[in-house]
Length: 468
Image 1 (cartoon, helix red, strand yellow):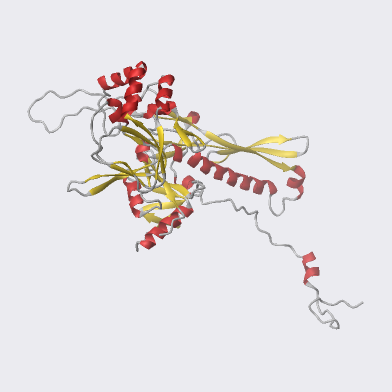
Image 2 (cartoon, rainbow, N blue to C red; image 1 turned 180 degrees about the vertical axis):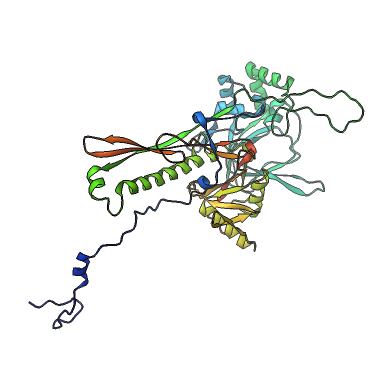
């Protein structure tokens, strides 16, 4: 029988061993198991980590009078929106008011209105006689400058409000700004006349507001902290003020969260197929990568301690026009001293680059742990795909001051735990079950803390699909 190579003619004899036969005697060179879901995890790499002995970290601060996040939450049925009654206690003059019947009656008096982009919601110089709460959309506030020109006073968005102090207190004043819808905007409004009728009928509401007006809050600084009385610039021997630094009676405690899984490997696989690569070792390596990815996701998105949910209201800003511009980034950075890190989704970084290119600007790069990162005003912008991109094409950008000594954002963990494999992560052997399966409990413990409110800021409503 004549053996021929497929690449040869029918009458040509094979002169050497074929490749297919030769491979039966060769050893295949193999890679270690690869994983597509591994990201740079810049947050875990750059976040300063602090030991949380006892599994918790308490943040002691000076006494702060402002509570809550200042934003009103809504419920919706179809196209109709209604403020949650208890959320109306976010109005400064209703702080601490807990009469649910009164708040429900107040919430029912709000009426819904829709505004198109460019519509004026309130106009400077007209009577401030309406409470306006934004349910959805963005609104720009403009005022009058020193020389009569228009000046931008900022952008407000979902849940924010104005006019409540004027209407609830009964002050007869005029708007000192013009509020104009930047996008299609849904608001709920409560005219002064409607509130006055309700106020006359509901005694608990009337009594609470009267008490708030009769006993104004204690002296406080611009951050809402209890004031420290200090004398300065005096001559002679005047009587100096006495003071003390008051602390919060119920400081916040951050408990370490956990991400866990049980790794299973059959003993037959571990015994017979661990050459040249240890099967248990690589199963464990990929499992730990997945846990670290989940850890970073939780540090960004967890509702208890995640960065997106723990930014103070005064540290949340919205983009002025939709896409992120150099002006927006400047506003975000200027909200805090010593900003050290900006986190953004890769698509947001690309959108920012397009805006820079359209203006003829260039963002320099900096070496961070051996890699080149784009910067703005000297602050590195690290990609983080854990920051969500909403269905409407918007995302957020996070800016942080870092470190305990800087009163910034810190990561929390505990090292030295039993069977520790990496800092704050342990692998504990759970035995072999009746199916001859090895089991390992893999756990990582972590959290994050914001030491003072201005350490963390968020730029919201960043549109990533806008073309300059």
